[in-house]
Image 1 (cartoon, rainbow, N blue to C red):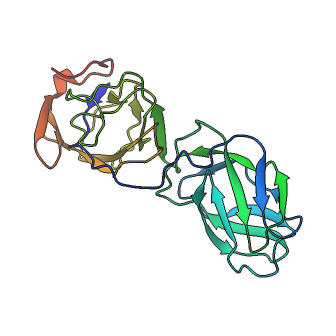
Image 2: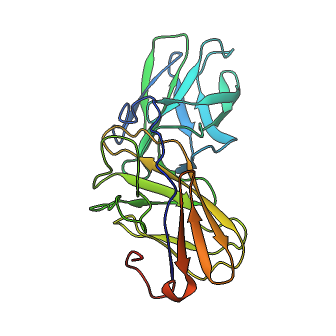
Length: 246
């Protein structure tokens, strides 16, 4: 199994703290008298569109109506009036950890009456993406996804790495270990890339994306970034290799 290294560190970007609105279980719904979220999915993905939220007793027109998921604002694309299916989009830059808690949908409109409804859903990466909970992550060695990460503080246990499930050109399955080591299921034969993000457990805020590029020549795979390349001989990139390249 080939061991792959991430590119030069990502710059952490500002965002709304993902800890807001993370309470599990029942949700307070603020809206028109008796407004209730009557149906909702049990799982939603980052950036998902056309998410169907059933609503009963809402205001006749959208007005200032809003809906949040885990405290993060979502976009309403279709408003049903007093009852029907609300269609929303989950933001692609949403600042929430994956599956750490079951996050809640909260609907708000012009009225102040309240009702209580259980409207929670698990949060997953988008199709084609995966995540790993980090345990004692290594970020200073060449064979680890967190190598040379420039955000502060350094990655810690409980943070998460989000990464492609496969490389782009050859669809080689990618595995991430809890210490942040990245491995491939087979040797690349042409140039491949994959994208990585770091999610902070303390805040839920995600880093900017960095891209790892693998460039293959006759006997080496170059793992490149904006600053330097690492040339790894094929003989050192075996299917069983899980330790960092030396």
